[in-house]
Length: 403
Image 1 (spheres, rainbow, N blue to C red):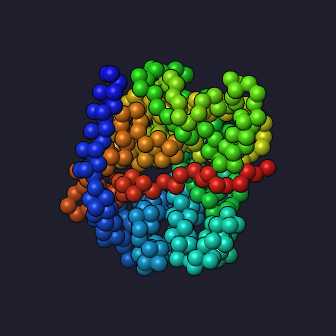
Image 2 (cartoon, rainbow, N blue to C red; image 1 turned 135 degrees about the horizontal axis):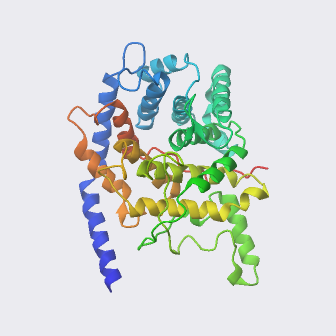
Image 3 (cartoon, rainbow, N blue to C red; image 1 turned 30 degrees about the horizontal axis):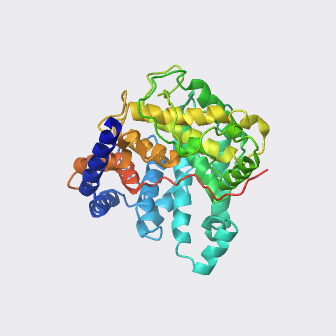
């Protein structure tokens, strides 16, 4: 009876939040943010100010990615000028190159929607990204070089600054860049993902409090690749002893078991476990799992129970320490909130226990936005718009298994 009362109360709270956060209000907020950003572009096509000195490619790539994801056409002169600037820059830093790849993938994804219905169906049938049909040979060669830069910038499953030690922040952006690279149809060595999951399992907290209200984590509770999921279901159907249903996935996506809140730090021996790094950990583990599922190597499958437990317990940490008004245990707030968006979408979790991450985050952002459309500065405005737009691409479920 008590549990029923709690559930009803939560439903009422969600309904009240949903009434406050209408699609109309969110779209108006995004449009105001877009206009603020557009006004800040200089005549040479890039954006000056904070972060532009250290990340000349990174800041402009983040802004271009945000604008396209927020609905600005890649054919708009603002975007064309920005790409003209970006396409001249060398590949030097992980953050910058990753965001550049993400911006290019977003550009061709948007342009692909303007192709004829016949061409779109043909691309979908062949499982091709519009990049394959629309990018010039020069653009394709540049993307191959960008992907090679990311792939060769790690040897142990961690990425870092040019002269620094690897960290989870650089690594999550490298994984997002490789995620976009895979969507473009460019090859990525699956062994990279294997190294990532091994490291993330190693550096995640070894233990943590058991959360009181366990919840379903789709990315951990079932295979991500739909073909593998179909095969699994057929194998289960053939089992004579139904009590031995698949050791890799001991529960269905509709049941819950106990979860321990275990998060991640910036580096293994650096600082505290935080919200931004734990959302990064969840995102990296889900992306890696999605592509490892297509790699028919037996050695990674031995890690699968630990991978699923890692994703599940990372989500448990987010729920146990859930915050919207600050980055749990310190750090950049809007960087964390954009990380929360990624963790929510990639893991498939709508509610971290009792918290509807999107409605609670959107309410805060609508309250924080200034009259001129900004959220503190251009970078925070990008993070806010990407959150509001739910811009992260979910891990693909329709891809074919690879040898």
